[in-house]
Length: 94
Image 1 (cartoon, helix red, strand yellow):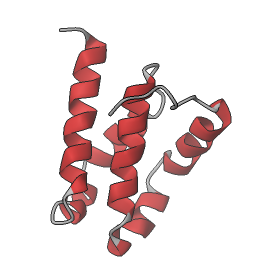
Image 2 (cartoon, rainbow, N blue to C red):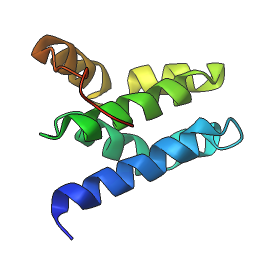
Image 3 (spheres, helix red, strand yellow):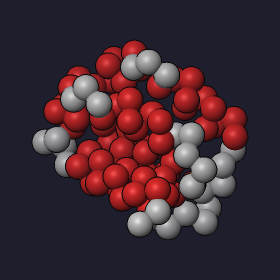
């Protein structure tokens, strides 16, 4: 299995966990989840980036998570970088 497939599998699992409102606070409180999601924003595969962004969107739907998300090291800068790259997500399938 390639590293790219592994990355997509991991980020899709995190996205699926974040889709459940009951998991959102626990994911943000976990020491490794947010830093890991942020690293996926720079991945060369647009599907990996898209899934990471979707996971963060789900996490941000929980009001209690928003300050922690904004304050996470590298989060805002990485989001700006994704927006500036203007990655075309038109051809991304979920």
